[in-house]
Length: 211
Image (cartoon, rainbow, N blue to C red):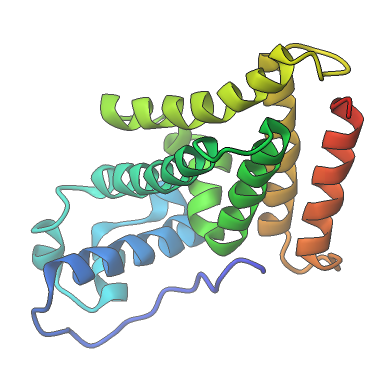
C-alpha cells in the first residue's frame, strides 16, 4: 500500500469531456504533483500537462493552485466525516464504534496516500495556507464526531486513564503515526499493513479500555 507513482508526464491534449470527471482528474494529478514537486514547485501548467488539457481549460475549473489544494482538503474531510457520522449512529458498543472509526481512517489513508500526506503531514506553504471557513468546520466536525464516541466510553467509566478528550487525541495521534510512516516510507519492509493496523488498534484499546 505504498504511495502511488508521483512522476508527472506530458500527455496529448484531451477533447473536452464531462466536467465532473475532468475536475476529478485535475485533483488526482494535483495530488501527485504537489507530492512530487512540493506546493511551491507545482504549477498550473504542470498539472494541466499531466491531465492533458490546456492551462486555460484548467482555469475554467480552478482559479489557482490554492483552490485545488482547498478542494483536495475539503473532499478528504467530507469523506471522513460521512464515514464517522455513519458509524457514530450505529447501535453498537461505543468501543466497537471507536475501533471502526479508527480502522476506517487508517484504511482511507492507505488507499489515498497522496491526499493523506497533503492534508495531514505536509509542512510549510501547504499547512500554512488558511482553510476556507467551511472546510475548517468540516475538519472540526470530523474530530468532534469521533471524540464524541470516545467521550461515551469515558462517561461509562471504562477508561483506565485520561479523559474523553485526551484519550481521543492519543488514539488519533497513534493511528496517524501508522498511516504517516507507512505512506511516507513505502519501500520499508513493512509487515502486512492490515495486520499492523489491527495490532495497533488492539494494543491501544485493550490498554485503554476496561472490559
